[in-house]
Length: 549
Image 1 (cartoon, rainbow, N blue to C red):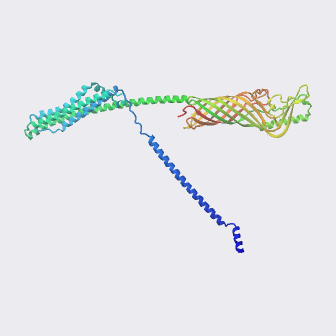
Image 2 (image 1 turned 180 degrees about the horizontal axis):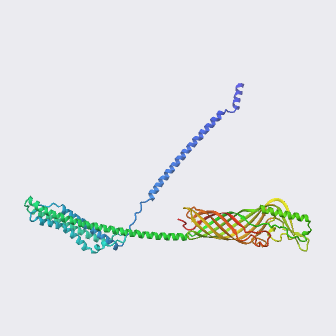
Image 3 (image 1 turned 180 degrees about the vertical axis):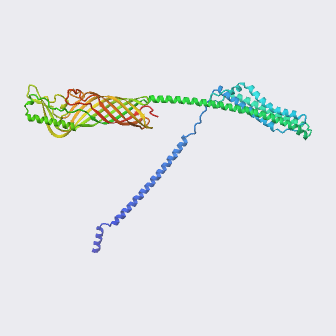
């Protein structure tokens, strides 16, 4: 018992085998896969139901809201313009139809046996009876409405006039047409009855007499009837050709007027679009490098006064040597710095290619250098033995004025530090730009202009704690820099139209200043040149109005 209990306790305390955990993990994986499959099946069914509902709803909406196409409505003309075209057509149709029918009936009518003496007379009467309805139908129609007959040759002013007939005048024409047709039918019937009665009442003399006398009569009738039929056919066909030519002429005139109206409308629309799309707005960003063109004088040490004459000769020589080293270091280390300009411009298009631009902008021009020399100036107060100094500075600041060695000048070498020269201007640019097409959406441009640059701030910043920073504000009278400076710029590049109104452009830009940075360069010991910038101009333009089509 103890042994069995000990074995049971060992089995309970022993860790389960790896197969057990693998089976548990497999069971959990199977359960998760089953739940995932059931979820995917549910979502698929839900998506299919939603798509089906959307298709049904879309079809119902298309069937409900989509009506039949609206047929073009013919333009209704004036009654005076349409009655002249409707009445002749109706009368011509009535006359030609009845005349052709009567002629064909007479042509196919079977003659009865006649006597030799009376055969020619009876056949002549038959032919005459066939021609009488035609003449009788034409004469009443012409006598009833002579104005309509005369108006058949007039050109219809508008194609839509053939579809519009006033009610009262149309009924009058219809009545005359009905009366003429009834009279033709009655006369045709009477002529056929008369010929039939003569054929039955007259006694035939024989078969030979019919063959001898009837044949010439039929030959005469067959000659007369086709002649009438041919004449009527020629009249009908000529009238149909005339009406067709008149209708084609009216249609050509209508199309020409429509084209002229469309051209005038297009010209007016283009003129409005051109006048509305002359104005444009633009934003430009121009990263560049700035060259300030301010040097260091070759002779830095000025004449010494009585205060500086107490210094030993070796100290003066060492100070002059260090000053030359500082000047050479500045000339080697100074270089253009990263600058940028931002402008907001409004443009006015002059014609199709030229554009006048003006706006407002901000520029920040920088230059940088490295230095390891610190210069400090001293001034002696008159009447006292005390001296004062504005603090340590770089070699660049004393070279801007002519009295940098007023009393004494101290030069000391220190650890290397960076110097940043920063100039901030408010600009008012004015310029012109010319554009040319390169393709469907691409274009090239070239432009130039001038700008007034208002100096907002000048800063000389040093990374060393031993050197003080120098700042000149807009209202600082001690600033040696020019407050207002004029510059000119030229640019060229390519652009792309993103839409009818929006376009982008990029290209190089050169900006040169007309004057030096210092307001009085003749008083400064440092050599002066005109500064300039070189960079890339990136612009975004938006044309007001409908834009290009």
